[in-house]
Length: 133
Image (cartoon, one colour):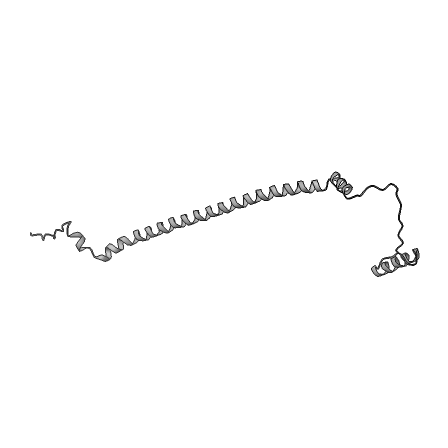
């Protein structure tokens, strides 16, 4: 009985016998995986940059709000000072204004015909509005 001996492959000849398609097939998943990792990495960097820019915008807006609140407080204080009765009385005295020494009531008659004309006008107005006198 003779057995045929199988050809012995040496380790040195093994890579030369593997077809390029097999090697490319083995590398393809690693290339896809590496490419996906790179995309995820750059995506994280982009989102971090976006968040940092938003943080800078928020800081700038908060600084503007603080400035405007301080300005509003200053303007409210100025309004309170301008409304002060003492300041108004002092300014009026500087312009030559004074309190009257006696009170004189004034009566102004706006009707041409007296009180009857006023009643007639009110009657006409109520009629236009549709209400009863």
